[in-house]
Length: 167
Image 1 (cartoon, rainbow, N blue to C red):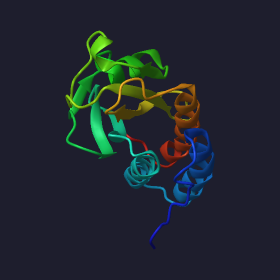
Image 2 (image 1 turned 90 degrees about the vertical axis):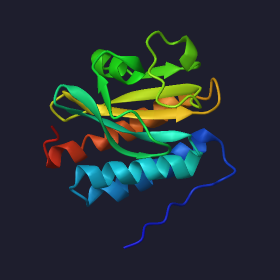
Image 3 (image 1 turned 135 degrees about the vertical axis):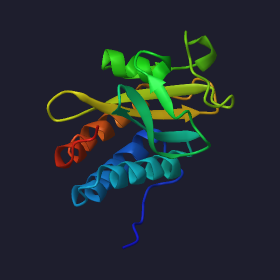
């Protein structure tokens, strides 16, 4: 079945988050496969906002390993505590980076990325399953609105980790 994403293309980010979040909830509610759900969410974020890169890194084998994404090629593995993704994982906190060149230890998967936001993905038991990583090719592209919107989406994704253990 083909899915259709409906949102106001000319609206601001706050309204777009308000419009896509319930659609994401419906999209993932009937699908137990983690990878399928994450792939669709990455596609929704890229389509709705035109982000340079949107995707996921999942905890596997003691590292963050590339999962479903939309955008150019990406780093395959990131050590815990390294770069923005590793920092978000290690602290369990969302990290907003206005200028990636000023983030100590930033991992440059693409030289075109200028700003970044990374949100930890929690399992229902409180452990971290991975991170949602969004990059922009514009400096200072992410705000408090993005943090709130992406954290709401990350909260919805908790349910996908109930169905299957992702290692």
